[in-house]
Amino acid sequence: MNILAIDTSGGVCAAAVLEDAHILSEVYMDGRRTHSETMGVMVDQCLKYAEMNTRDIDLFACAIGPGSFTGLRIGAGFIKGLAHVSGKPAIGVNTLDALARNAAGFDELICPIIDARREEVYTASYSEGTQSAPYRALPLKLLLEELAGRKVLFLGDAALKYREKILSESPLFSVAHSGIALQRAASVGFLAYDMYQSGVRQDAYSLEPFYLRETQAERVYAERQEAKK
Image (cartoon, rainbow, N blue to C red; front, side, top):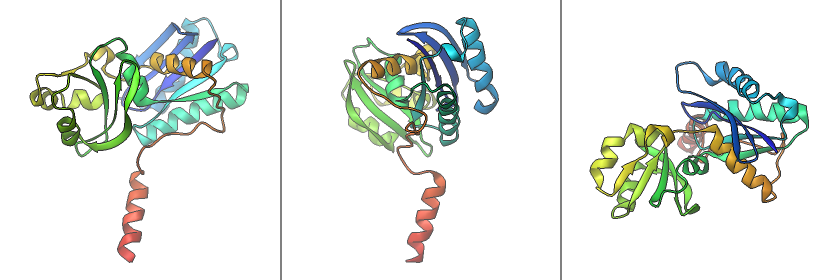
């Protein structure tokens, strides 16, 4: 099975082509250009390096969040468009799951954390390849207090942003090195393949972003409605 996977859920923009669970090509960019500027070019490069075109792809996959609302819409829209035109299936992979996959094989508790601003994070926890805590958004301080006394490996943009704060909280806390700390499209592809093999089926119409919490516009609207009461 040939898989095209992308991740635009954060500052990193990444694309990969896999044959089953084997990476054929992967392109990763963490720069100033927007995802809408780079995504198409990166996908073309990945397909070229893998000596394929979109007609050769059997499954399209993208990270669906949580993460940047704009980035998630760009990624989901891109993959939905390819899946619709080709008539092939598409699968959405949770960004936290994909980040945790980056650290597969580590014996610590794996805790990806994505910056949700105002020192809050999107997070979940994973132990021995299985999710052990639910997806949620909460203050980083509260999360660190909950995990005190445990050996934990942190990944994600918030892990890099708050590295010193995390390491100062406990000698048992560690932050992943830069090679696996941020989103990788290959990890999205690995999980999409596993999901498909286990019977998960989605398409251009059922794939949607997973925001975890309301957008800023929705929160402002709710606050205004509450103020009118």
